[in-house]
Image 1 (cartoon, rainbow, N blue to C red):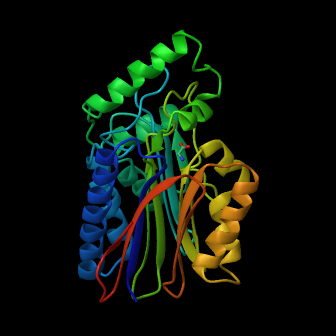
Image 2: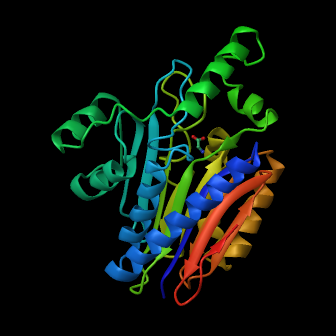
Length: 301
Ligand code: GLY
């Protein structure tokens, strides 16, 4: 049984162009990821391939295309976890095109789970990851300039209100995620993001916090998108994992989404259970997603 399900973020599309870019981007990523999953037969390789393609696509808020912090730089979060509870994650990573590769390296090469700050910088150097100073794309710079102007005239509050303001202005959070199952029954979840636009003070979102934005265990694999602070407080992915002990993926996602709605948490979730069932749900107005199951055509939102 092979299946790959991905998301390209949640929120509100601002234009038909934004919608079609996301649609195209998730289709390409799921097709590429599934061909790797089918060829190399590994959920890990399939997930990585899909995420890396989205990290290279300026449409998405991750890798090249990440949003800017209040200070105008890029700080990325990423995590990967499998059904044997192997996991690796990075927080506040700078100047690397594929944060998901660094997270994988932490999972495979260290006894740790989550690296950040100077230690992460050292790790990146020791492991020889190439630095990339060219991750900023024009539409993110424009978004930052507009937000900075709003911040100056008081429309955008500096401390912690960025998400609410962004939500009201119809923003789309294009965090990316992928979950896969392979023939051995191995499940893998991965998420990669530039985080919340205009974030401050080394803010870390839900994505690298296991159980919040990314989670996998014997019952399933889950990735989230949306407002990280609320997703963290609800440990939303772990909640889906807990429900998948009893229910198929879709019912588990529906229950977690109900909880998220109660807390006004703007988010989206994708999940795959151990039988290869798919779960997709969101409280946000829009979410981009796509999946392929063995022997079937791609299904794109
Ligand atoms: N969900 C992405 C973030 O809040 O950073």
